[in-house]
Length: 327
Image 1: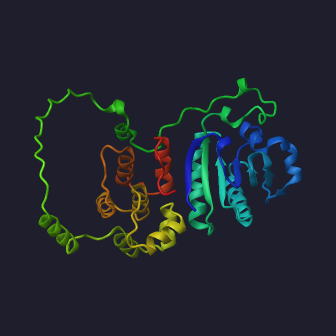
Image 2 (image 1 turned 30 degrees about the horizontal axis):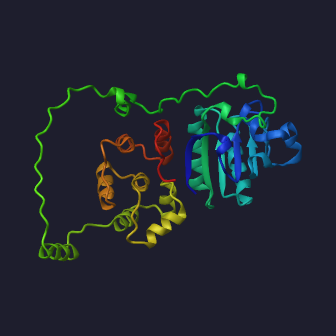
Image 3 (image 1 turned 45 degrees about the vertical axis):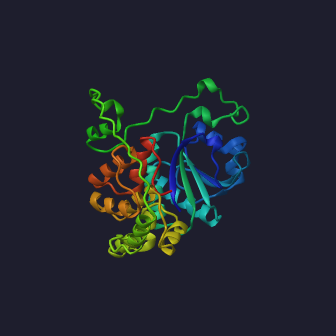
């Protein structure tokens, strides 16, 4: 069920279905429909209609999709068209859906709709990928351009800054914002004196570690204790964390499961943990906040600004060219 945001060429993308929120006159729409062109609407099964919109399901052989939904309703009807389209794709038992966008300005509303769908309406395990092409040239190949001239295809606009308040605080992510400092004097060299422990010392250490009483709470125990302390169900938590049901079941059934750091962050956001509580959850999994990690700094800043929605956080990470959480 998780979703992800990627910047890539649509020609290299792989999915069972495509949902294209593009206008009928767009280059993206022409590429998705392929040689079927305007006649596609006469050959496919239509979804529920809205004034001034066309939404339907068809098959796209040139994209190797089992099914594709293309919708270009007016903005006021788009949320309903989105839900209607995804409901039909769910009935087709589609397991992966690609949502290509023309502009980054579409990213936030589409992320919001996807998160709402996954949290409240979808019971399937469909994987959703939101794709922003590197540039519009990436949409076309000589066999797929359908007469479009390459010199008339505009490049994508540069990425916009993350839409959060108090953007001055974001300067900490820029290397150019770090003031230059004089190189510190070299530290004195440390002398190394090799020493091999004897067998008795090793045996004592083994016994001490085996019988240690201050081992601390494991990640598994801490995570499910924190979940039990909330009024949310397991399903609500793993959906909010953008974690698949299969992975969550694996974590629950294995007390010794060792998660990745991004998985810990995803659960911390889903549980609305404070920075201090997140530090303890990280420590239980063998991690810590790192001041040298852009992802760590981004997650910490989001928590400090009370931004916990995984869609908002992943949108921010995408704008910073960082890997998203959960998926």
